[in-house]
Image 1 (cartoon, helix red, strand yellow):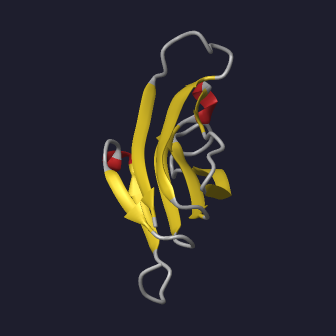
Image 2 (tube, one colour):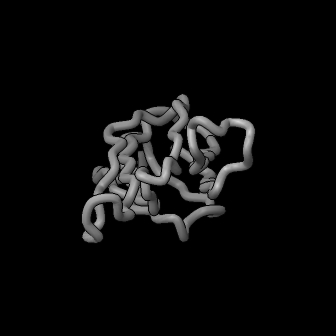
Image 3 (tube, one colour):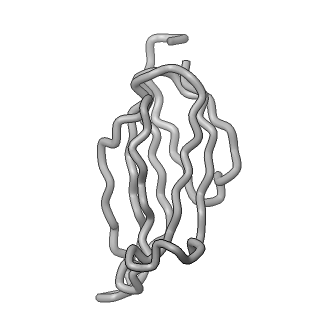
Length: 109
């Protein structure tokens, strides 16, 4: 790890396609648009090198049934290069293409 301070790297949907360098112990937060009442939810895979600390839907200010955000908080625990690939889809339609995808390369030192 370079330096004594752990960082929090905040990412959003607009960061899809980027390569991000982090250090072991750093926290990565990811906020993605989501409206679970439509059935379209983000799937978060288990990846060696990342511990999922928090994975929850945060309701927006649009009332019941409105859109909101999928908030995912992860901690880098291993070194190496990994690809975080998330898909927003309806769970009961696994053979249809996802409505949306998020892709991020993480280089962990």
